[in-house]
Length: 79
Image 1 (cartoon, rainbow, N blue to C red):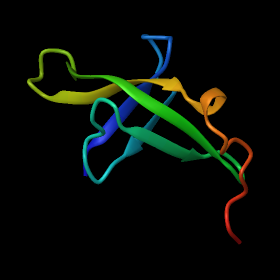
Image 2 (cartoon, rainbow, N blue to C red; image 1 turned 180 degrees about the vertical axis):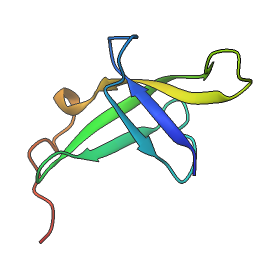
Image 3 (cartoon, one colour; image 1 turned 120 degrees about the horizontal axis):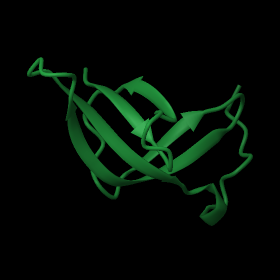
Image 4 (cartoon, one colour; image 1 turned 90 degrees about the horizontal axis):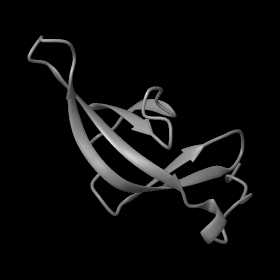
Protein backbone atom coordinates (compact mmCIF):
# COMPACT_ATOMS: atom_id res chain seq x y z
CA UNK A 1 0.00 0.00 0.00
CA UNK A 2 1.79 3.18 -1.11
CA UNK A 3 2.03 6.05 1.35
CA UNK A 4 1.32 9.28 -0.54
CA UNK A 5 1.95 12.89 0.45
CA UNK A 6 -0.86 15.15 -0.78
CA UNK A 7 0.03 18.80 -1.46
CA UNK A 8 -2.09 21.78 -2.33
CA UNK A 9 -0.45 25.21 -2.77
CA UNK A 10 2.30 24.91 -0.15
CA UNK A 11 5.07 22.76 -1.62
CA UNK A 12 6.96 22.59 1.67
CA UNK A 13 4.24 21.05 3.85
CA UNK A 14 1.77 18.33 2.80
CA UNK A 15 -1.95 19.02 3.18
CA UNK A 16 -2.22 15.44 4.45
CA UNK A 17 -0.59 12.05 4.04
CA UNK A 18 -2.38 8.78 3.44
CA UNK A 19 -2.06 5.10 2.64
CA UNK A 20 -3.68 4.38 -0.72
CA UNK A 21 -4.47 0.98 -2.22
CA UNK A 22 -2.98 2.39 -5.45
CA UNK A 23 -1.24 5.58 -6.50
CA UNK A 24 -3.75 8.32 -7.45
CA UNK A 25 -3.36 9.31 -11.10
CA UNK A 26 -3.55 12.64 -12.87
CA UNK A 27 -7.19 13.66 -13.37
CA UNK A 28 -8.59 11.44 -10.61
CA UNK A 29 -10.35 12.67 -7.48
CA UNK A 30 -9.62 12.06 -3.82
CA UNK A 31 -12.50 12.28 -1.32
CA UNK A 32 -11.40 12.80 2.29
CA UNK A 33 -13.70 12.44 5.29
CA UNK A 34 -13.47 15.65 7.30
CA UNK A 35 -15.83 15.24 10.21
CA UNK A 36 -19.07 14.04 8.69
CA UNK A 37 -18.73 15.14 5.08
CA UNK A 38 -16.24 14.69 2.25
CA UNK A 39 -13.76 17.23 0.90
CA UNK A 40 -13.11 16.56 -2.80
CA UNK A 41 -9.69 17.11 -4.34
CA UNK A 42 -8.74 16.92 -8.02
CA UNK A 43 -5.28 15.42 -8.71
CA UNK A 44 -3.38 17.80 -11.02
CA UNK A 45 0.22 16.57 -10.68
CA UNK A 46 2.04 13.36 -9.67
CA UNK A 47 5.75 12.99 -8.84
CA UNK A 48 8.15 10.94 -6.72
CA UNK A 49 10.55 12.60 -4.27
CA UNK A 50 13.75 10.95 -3.08
CA UNK A 51 14.20 10.99 0.70
CA UNK A 52 17.75 12.32 1.08
CA UNK A 53 20.24 10.22 -0.89
CA UNK A 54 18.66 6.96 0.29
CA UNK A 55 17.41 5.72 -3.06
CA UNK A 56 13.95 5.53 -1.44
CA UNK A 57 11.30 7.56 -3.24
CA UNK A 58 8.09 8.96 -1.77
CA UNK A 59 4.96 9.27 -3.92
CA UNK A 60 3.53 12.80 -4.00
CA UNK A 61 0.47 14.36 -5.64
CA UNK A 62 -0.68 17.95 -5.99
CA UNK A 63 -4.40 18.60 -5.71
CA UNK A 64 -6.82 21.48 -5.99
CA UNK A 65 -9.84 21.73 -3.70
CA UNK A 66 -12.71 20.84 -6.01
CA UNK A 67 -15.56 21.46 -3.55
CA UNK A 68 -16.29 24.88 -5.01
CA UNK A 69 -17.15 23.20 -8.32
CA UNK A 70 -19.25 20.27 -7.05
CA UNK A 71 -22.71 19.98 -5.53
CA UNK A 72 -21.54 17.51 -2.90
CA UNK A 73 -20.07 19.95 -0.37
CA UNK A 74 -21.70 19.41 2.97
CA UNK A 75 -23.20 16.07 2.00
CA UNK A 76 -23.49 13.99 5.14
CA UNK A 77 -22.02 10.51 5.37
CA UNK A 78 -24.53 7.68 5.78
CA UNK A 79 -24.98 6.58 9.39
